[in-house]
Image (cartoon, rainbow, N blue to C red):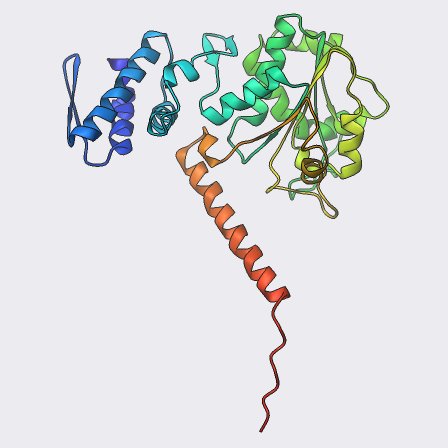
Length: 321
């Protein structure tokens, strides 16, 4: 019951938020639901699903409750079954998809050679791809993991920093190192990096290579040029997988088109290539992140509409006297 309710009954409060008008009270080892019959029935189904997850050893968070309610509300099946399969277990913590969009993304990685994960911040694009890469390495499905991203500043200028080229590009690659240390034994990671089993490098280092028996992840792909995207995709060798992740609303390129935006038009109908599009509904960070994403999306749409109207506005006729 303690795990079901969460710290300070946080999960209990989340259940109440999913069903306006519902009252939830806990007495000992029992949960009492009060409200309209239809609402109580839906809430009971949700609680039953959460009980199954807890019994399976899952540590629930508010996002799990909200996503389970959404799945049940849409009639898309049992959340306990759909979201139960763990990709990886690291230091007692399981890494698994938390939304239907994330599950579809993970399933697409299993079925396709190249997968593009496109969506806003917090949707787990890179994190889940890295979990699949570590899983593939542990299962000996690949011989190495290659993680890369373009070295483009997000508004800042880091070129003045002292040190070698490796020191200068390290800030760009730090998120990938952090994720690796979360998913693998931190003492093992330096050995894998030294042996080349795991490689973390800027995108420019991929030129001229053929990557066989590898799981390759290109992160922050919205900051690639069309030429860089073509170069990267043509590095694909035998027995390899590629996952390309990015958010086309956060392009930091100073000029020119984004390679990620262009490739969605060029390769959209090619077999064995899948485009997984995640949305604010798949954000698993703080609930405010999803609302921030939606707010910016609405603003961008309004701005584009205003720009279009301004560009197509007919010149006003001069008044005649």
